[in-house]
Length: 134
Image (cartoon, one colour):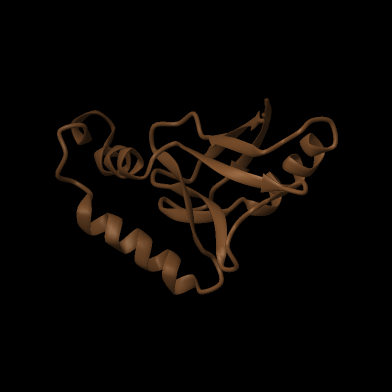
């Protein structure tokens, strides 16, 4: 298992982590038959998303849709630390994803990238990578 950290700068944002993951995937592929990688964030208020990164409007649209589904300030958990919406968004999106690997790189579509979805930042987040072989 490998790990790296990301520092987010806003309460809600999508941070492209494709390059960091690809660097670790290339390193792992040098020593083993790597077919896929499990990427996991061990946090309750962030998640992982595969989507377009070329047009920033897509990222804005994803965050806006999640704000409509889980608006701030209406959750029971807000009484504890005012981030109930972040927990709901993270639960809907999910903390892990399995991605195929080919020739030491993520096998993503032309416009796809992997992003950490921050819902309660700014924070420092850990990203864990678990190699999957045959």
